[in-house]
Image 1 (cartoon, rainbow, N blue to C red):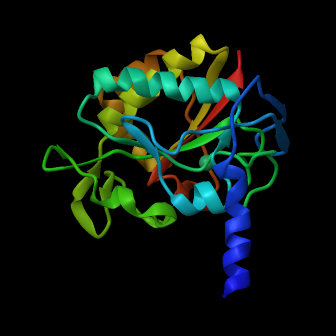
Image 2: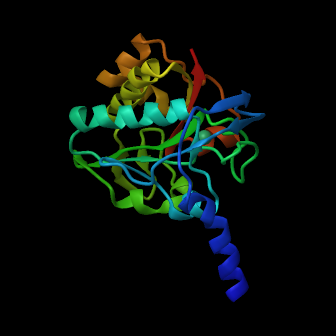
Length: 230
Ligand SMILES: [Zn+2]
C-alpha cells in the first residue's frame, strides 16, 4: 500500500512543480509525433477547468504546445464576456513529451485538445454530469444530442459553437488555425443549425466527414480539435 502510494505520488510530482517558459515545438503529426518544451495547461481558470484530477496529475495528460496554451487562455477570456454564466471544461491534451497515450491514437504533438460538450436542461446550463472526471468519456448521447439515460439533458450546440468561434479567433492571434474538428457524424446537423454553427460553417472550419465506427461513437460527449501552424 505504502509503495503504491509512493509510486502514485512520484507520478504526480512532475505536474506539481512544472513551470511554463519559452516556446514549444511540435514535431511530426498528431498521430505520430512528439512535443518539445511543452506547456502545462492550468488546472483551473476563472471560467474553465481541466476535467479530471487523475488525468492531469497522475497520467500527466494536460500538456500542449505553448501556442495552444495561449490560444485557450485567450478564448476563455473572451468567453467570459460572450458566455458569462458558463463554466467550460477542457479534457485530455498531450503528454509532456508527446507521443503515445493510453486512450488516444492521436494527441501526440501538443496540437490536439478534447473539449467537453456544454449541456443544457430545460433551457438552463446543466453541469451535473460535468464532474465525472475520466468517466465523462463514457457518456452517450442520441442523434439529437440528448443524454441517453436522461433525455432532458442535451448538448448545448449554440454554446459549443461560441466556444469554437472564440478558439478560432484566438488561434489566429497565436499563429495557429483550427485544422479539424471531430464531432459524432449524426450530431453535426443539429450543430450546424445553430447561429454559431452557421458562423463556423461560414468560416470554413473543417469537421471530419467520415469516421470509423469506433471513433464516431466516442465523439458525442466531447469534440476533438486539431490545431495547425498557419
Ligand atoms: Zn481527442
